[in-house]
Length: 475
Image 1: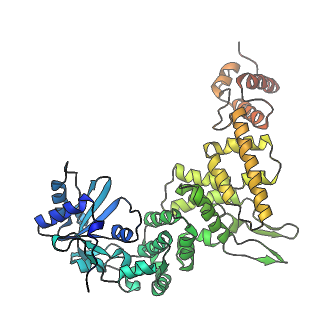
Image 2: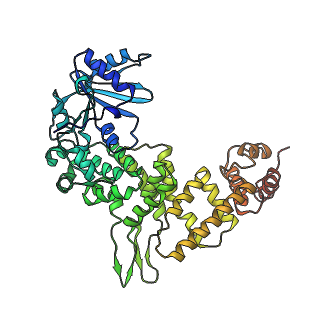
Image 3: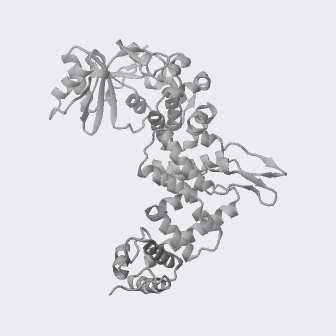
């Protein structure tokens, strides 16, 4: 049977140079993995290419650099036997063909030199084991030992070898398989899916950083619920984010039920995707209701309540970020703020929108008010068309009020017209409780609309309050 050839698809100059370098050092080379997969799927490939050399990947990288204009710098990672260089904004990684074996307690393999077939055997999925020859004799020929091309055509995620071995050796592959299913809109083959369920506990040996890397990629897909439902059905999500799966518990007492907040959450995440590429805003959508499981209560007159779930959810965010070794910086604080404020615009959309309430919303949200509104609009998942339209019409009113209040009162990133230092100087005070009282009174008066956000109005108001506190202007 004739081999399939993709020579015309390898038109980038880098492949010609790698072919020349391979011949010069008498080494076979192949482009493998994601580049080949995306090429055959006619997808835009990410700016990285994996090259496998049947020999030394480091030696091949150095020779390629020598043949390229400007001789780009080669980064060598001796411990891993890999090297990397950049050409035309593309990162090209070179690795020697190898075979691997694993110990049960680690995902770090014992590595030996191997053949192209050995290297393809160690790949996670058949669609990532496809390789195109860069050798002069058969440049562009496809090597497909596991029928990966057929799996691409049938949109199937399948492991090259026994899935129990593949997933147990490197449990992160379970999450990668789910991520590829979500990214490519593929199905995980039945035996492979069953194996993920059987091996789910193995994910515990994977570091939080690597898990979050895959979660971020799932959250960055067009429809993250696809990936999260697979994580849930395989048991992985219960291990990774039990706070989320705890929401999948609908109770009924005396005929009163509440909505399934787990499936609602996934709907919110999907809703927010067309409006943002910000993975941290998507995290906010994912975690916005996590406080509902521990705060759920039933009262005969009120039915089901979740009082304070936003506040508790904000505290839970920090624990999740710590557990998964996520960044404990402004990114975490942003997600916390979004979770803690997630119901504020919705309450405004239910009630009459007052200037005072909008001023407080803008003051508390600051530069993140637009993100907060985006989250809250995504949070409307009612299937009642009248309710849906009413909420979104009201959100338009809230947005317009935000613009009007901000233009008039300038409360975003609010800085008081009179500083604490000025108050100390005016009344000849040392740092004291009275300074805080006056600053807070001025802020409240501006937010309530009692005075405009202007210096003279704030000064006059301060003098009245200072008199009530018995403070005298210094001479």
